Length: 315
Ligand code: ASP
Image 1: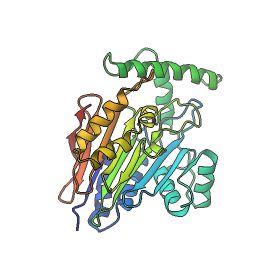
Image 2: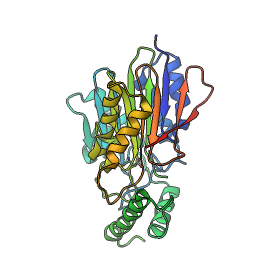
Image 3: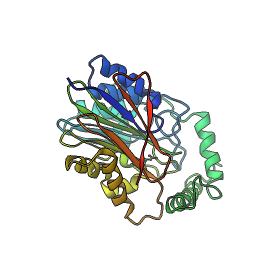
Image 4: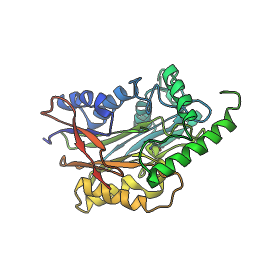
């Protein structure tokens, strides 16, 4: 039997204990990832995933999510899903109940959720609507962080977002996806990613969280990896896939994440903002990297009493 582990990006602590309970009872990595991610998606205080996520340029919440299994690289995902709070479960249903496809978006994703009995709900809360407005008002003057290429890019993105929102809604006046990776007692690995995506995005924009190889990749020959941050960069960089390829070549998880992020950072990008990566191997080693100092990820093993935070190395 393999020693089980579950890891997650910043703010996954809300869900990891539920995932570890599943693993301790002998449950699958897929069940563990789903149980953990649903807790995060249902956390109304988290504005970057599930209910209460920040909306697009028209003020509508659109969710992206995916799950991938390491043994056979089955992948299920939804993009720009409106009206269904637990995008991770709909992504899992795509993987299990629609094996002829991997990814559904927009209306088709919502139709599939409805056909499969998922309950529809309003995803925009009063708090996330207020935050959306507040961030717009401060979009041009303030961006957290220092005077780096990432902060400049983020600033430029927000200025462009403001223009977009003005154009799209003329009458209306720490970002981050959650990644969770689990290793079960049978040695299966599962990577789950869920997000409301970049606030103020163009309606219909699908980010890396739903795209295999970009924000999510899992292959037992190397490990599982996931990204948070500027999805357009990890889509162009194939970043999660690169991390796993480096693991397969024998790199340690934090080195694999660091090298993959450095490669991605070599791409020109006017809207550059921070990108982070996280990885777990089939023998339970884990690590992460980020463009900035001070980033962490959360870990639970069988003996843990709660999530422990580990530093990510700087890419
Ligand atoms: N990766 C997400 C996206 O591009 C956003 C994030 O992690 O902040 O939609």
